[in-house]
Image 1 (cartoon, rainbow, N blue to C red):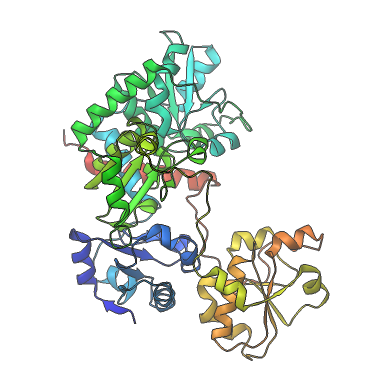
Image 2: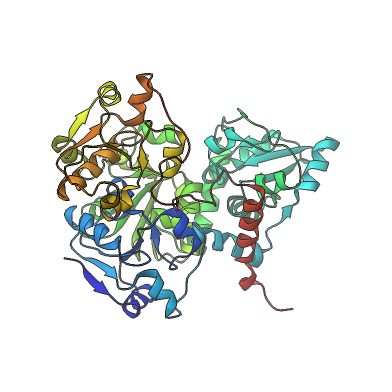
Length: 526
């Protein structure tokens, strides 16, 4: 049974050095509006999907919070059912925390964004405006524009003429990029907004390479009235030469000394891995997806370096944990670890020699991009009644629920279905189906959330519950009619992330202002 923890006790945990996790189980729209600094977002409906990666040691204290205390008991019960032994609920939630004048913040991935703005202000990271860059492109100036986002983001839209260069690859490959261009070519770095271009430009600044970060990235480009390129295919990374690798390794050695990144031998790493069941340890491989799938150290998860920094609070959910980065040598792991050290993480390591050193020590590498299992899903599928798409179409029950996000629901659901997020299922199902003998079909995008929801309904005493096998994916495959839009919603959606990629112009402006203002506190007085 989860214990209640007071706001004063939580404040003490946040200020201390004990490993613990603070998890906000509300939806992303609610979290982005206001949350406790240091809280990781794991909506109640997502717990089974990511908790074992987010909190790998089940004896670590986990504090869950929401706004008014209705969802936290459900989240705590899920965690305890999954084997977590030290679960606490924040008494009074974020509402009481705020009412007692403890701090809150808004936004997503705030630690990395705050850090990026600090870098720009403190180190005077150079930038270029969208108007200036556009003028240079029109004039035919010699430019190389490096997009530090993921290849997938780059291919959706990019600055015209830009090429993909994920931030985690920058230090390793920049020497070979420079060797391809003339001396009078200007290097420009961009991302979607600010953080990844700032951190990338700072990498080059520390390496002694002149570069400019595009102010406000693709968002600033659009706001200035310029068009983006869609479907760009310049994603091939330059091969790493001996010269390029030597420069990157030399840079890594300097970062390790200046920023305090420590190295682990394969034997030391093996000892640490053996303690993962009882200690908060994150094992992170920052290479490209191909390198990772070709062979990685067992237990390591793939987080390309730029994303590992951008989403540091999603990666290291447990505060005061140990974080180990790995690549194929020292360079990429050390650069990523350096950023973590600068963000305040204490126990940060890189695997000395990376995956090749592990293999050279006689230990096994594993291949493939294994998918983390959904905790409890196998048992759920074994206990629920599955119904095929055609059968559900021909024999619709009294109530059909869709339990994924409102965005998924709007994109397509079975005709007449009602949207009820699994986060609110136990709380609001009584308003939809007060009679527990009511036939209910549960649907979602893939069938996984549906199975977990059906188990919960059974535990509430509902006696006629079925699950659409394969979810809407199978429904569409069967060629059955699909209804779109927010029809049949039970509550106004609060699960929309307004700071996501698909933003309106107004949202872009507000986002960029918010992000820039994070750096104001680091400016020195004149």
